[in-house]
Length: 337
Image (tube, rainbow, N blue to C red; front, side, top):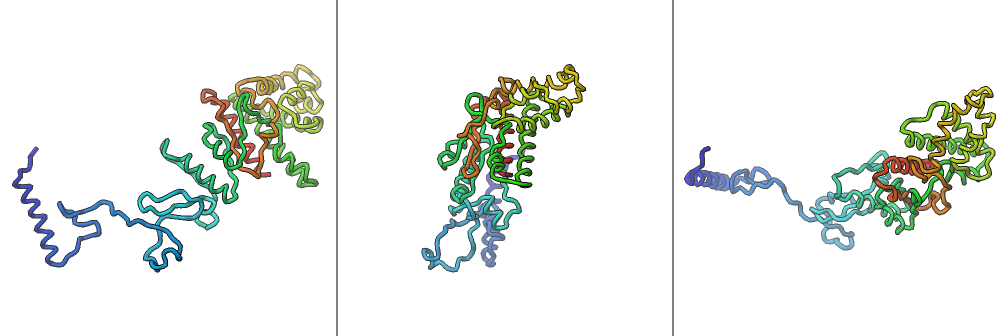
């Protein structure tokens, strides 16, 4: 490798100085705002912007008219200050939707771990709650949104073995709506609530079994839940559905086409009853779906809420998956009603 001598370095520097002096004598300016791209030319890859400040026309009236607008958005929930310009920054997806900036009021956030995603989401949630937009955290596995939601006057809904229970057979918010409605609208809400409850139960069975129930079992669940609603006084549990299947009502016999043969009926329903009993007595998903949803833990659309799943250990992925699925299902169904 050839090492440049001090003489060559000096000649190169002299050449750059002479070029700058020659350009200066002719009245030339730097080729761009970044400076001369020669040694000693002061070239900069990044141009620092001047600090920006905001104020009312009463406070900064002597500076009108401004030469340019601020570069940072200030629409919606305030985030803080721009680290480069010191100007205030504010933004949220609801405000952006209302202003016509985006076509849907949705926001997707992604970054590397520990860079402040949860902090920023929490700040947006607090701001929207102040503006009257209630927020729902449907499945907080770390418990990082619980304290903030409670501090805002929101509701913590715990879910986990021994900590909180969610009854898949409970229609939730739809139950209250059904009592208030009548006619075709009541029937519509009733059908949707039944379909949601059935879909949630089938999904939980799929997680517990690691395979979906058969078509015959889905029919038994559908018919059995309808019969249970007609016969049961109050809100039934999964165990009540299992007990109804064991009683062999005529509608279920017809559904499985047992032709009066108890052995055929047992072959069609025994596996289903085992799974239902497992959901009640500590199978793969524990016992968090085995009891009635406590009145204090019922969904409330008038308040922000968080489903707290932090009591479920990371070593129990099936239970975490079931808890998150139940949270999503309950939240989406409640909003739809």
